Amino acid sequence: MIMKAKGEYSFSTCWNIKKHTVGRELVEEIRQLGFSRVELNYNITREMLTTIEPMIERGEIGISSVHNTFPHTPDPDYGTDSVLLGFDDESKRQRAIELLVQSAEYAHRYGAKAVVVHPGEVPFPYDISEELEDIFNEQGRDSAAYQTLWGQMLERRNSLSGHYVQRIRDSLEEVCDRIASKGYDVAIGIETRSRCYQMPTLQEAKTIIDRLKGAPVYLWYDIGHGMIMDRMGLYDNAKEANEMIDYILGVHIHETIGLSDHWCPYIHSGDLEFFDRFVNIIRQAPIKVYELKAACQPEDIERSHELLTSKIAKLQPQG
Image (tube, rainbow, N blue to C red; front, side, top):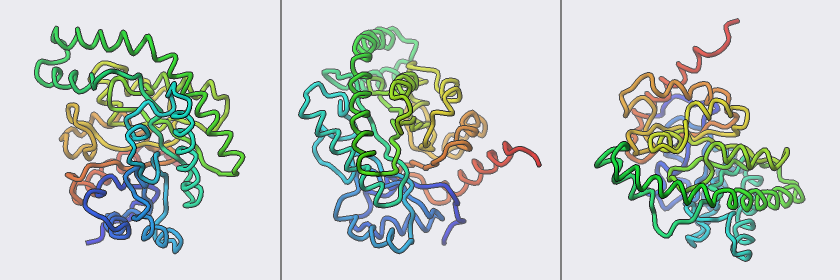
C-alpha cells in the first residue's frame, strides 16, 4: 500500500538504515510512505550511494538535506557525538572542517539546500548525560542525587562553553568561506542536541549565528532533542525556539516520551495537545524533515502526518 503524497515534507533515512544494505531498497521503502524527498543521514555509505545516485539523477527522489559527516565516516573523532568543530587539536579541527565541506559538496551535487551538523560539545571524561538520565528515570529531576550531579555538570559546562562556542564559530567561518569559494548554494544548519553537555543550546546557536554576521549558518531545530533538554533542565525549549523562529533553517520532526525520542508526534505519546506548541515553527521552517525511529510503523507515520498537517492548516491566515 502506497501512502498519500507528503508534499514538501522530507523523511530521514535514519528510520530504516539498519534494515538495508542496498541504497535503492532503502529509498524505495521511504517512497512507499508517500515521501518524494529524503534527508540522507550520516550512516549512508558510499556503497549505498551507488544505487541512490541514479535515482536522484532520474528525478525519482529529491534530497532535502544531508547530515554531516557524509558519507559515513567510521572514525568516532568525526562522528555525531564528538568535539568536532571545537577541537583544540588543530589537525583534528581542520579534518572536521574538510569533512563538513565534503558534506556540503554532496549536498550541492544532489540539489539539497542544507547540511545538518552536530557542531561540538563541552568534553567530559565520561557520558555524564547518561548517568543523569538514569537518575532522572529512577529518582526524578527533583531528587538530591540528580540536582547534585546536574550542578556539577552545569558548572563545568558553563565554565568551558564560551571557549567552544568561539572555536565552533571560527570553524564555521572557515567552512563558509570554502563553500562560497566553490560556488556551492548550500546552507549549514547547526542542530540542537540530546545530551546536556553537547552544543548548541538554543542560546548558544543564536550567539554563533549572530557572530557569523550573515554567513549561511542557521539553526536546525530538532524538536525532540529540545524536549529532552527542557525536561532535564537545560533550557526552556518551546519558549526559546518560538522566539528564534527566524533563525530556523530546518526542523527534525519527532516527539519525545520521557527522555526517549524519535516517536511520531501525537501518536505514541497519546497527547493531542502538547506538541501543538511547535506547529507554527514547523509551518514556517523552510525544510521539514521527519526523523523517526524504526519502531514507528507506516500507519503511525500516516496518522501522525495527518494530525500535524491538519493543525498547521488551521494556522493558515483566512482569505
